[in-house]
Amino acid sequence: MKFAAEIYFGGIDQPPGYLRDVLAEHIAAVPAGGSIDWITYYFRDLKLAEALVQARRRGVRITLSLAGKPRISNANDAVISMLSKVDGLGDGLRVVIIPGIPAPPGRAWKPQLHEKLYCFSDPKPIAFIGSFNPSGNTPEERPDIIQEIGDQDRGCNTLVGLTDPTLVEQLVHHARRLHQAPPGLLYRFSAEANEAIYGVDTIIHFWPRVGPHPVVQFLSRISSSARVRIFASHIRTEIAVNVMIELANRGVVLEIIADSTYRRVTTKVEQRLISAGIQFKRSRNPEGLPMHLKLVLVEDRGQVWSIFGSFNWTKPSFWLNHEIAAISSDPLIFRAFTEHCDLLENEESATPDRIGFNIV
Image 1 (cartoon, rainbow, N blue to C red):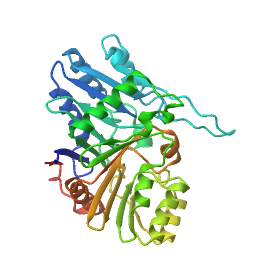
Image 2: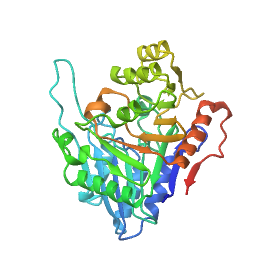
Image 3: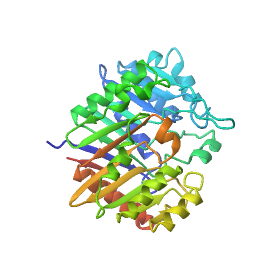
């Protein structure tokens, strides 16, 4: 049985704040007695935070697990201050700061709550995963933060709303369990971290974990006749580059579209990939907006898969951070991603008529 999915894309062909508006509309649609369960990394949008407060006041049950010290350590402070007040979210807010791991001198290994998960009970149960954080604010009082992390309200991001009841139920359970028992250094050894959630045609994986990297493991099994397109906001670790080069060496047709910034995808990485014969290019747009997707599209012997979520091709994402990823064989989800990514690769011809996909 196929279940509907809602897929939304932010980018230069959309109004600013399009994806945060999607979240705002879903908050407004949850009635008294319903529930909203979120996990997110950056959250600076005070109006969206106020929408959560208003939902709680009308009787919606809310859990929000939020990174307390993200890479820009004070980025979430204003939202945390608002939601921590007596008339905020009360015990519905959980600020998560994961203890650092002992590191060599001069190094800092700090795990982060990097998941992006937004679950709503009504008007139909749905769980959004993807690449979008509500990290902007209007009016913007900290342009320095936006300059550092990129304007995610206008950049290229996605939210994928899953409606398979098994997936939604288990993702809500995941969000509430993390909220009730904030993760520590031993979380990676728990059953929850290492067990997948299986839907009809989509599997959800979590990090940190002690088992193999599920995306790398999946790619290791595809045939040499496959075509793989990787849209990556971050590629920094040698392990990830080696995985990509190995695919190319096996004969896989591999295309990589990376973010334009050299902090997120270094020149060294770019040169290694190009030297291996991989089709590599950076996403460019006239305004320098971020390409924040974490997406892999696979075609192999008549089958297709879409891999999406919060994961990056970096050491923290591989080994330290709390991440989420879906591997889906739904051909309609693949088609929606493919159509959008074809536009992304030809941004100069993109038009604003592609605002979202409602897949049945």
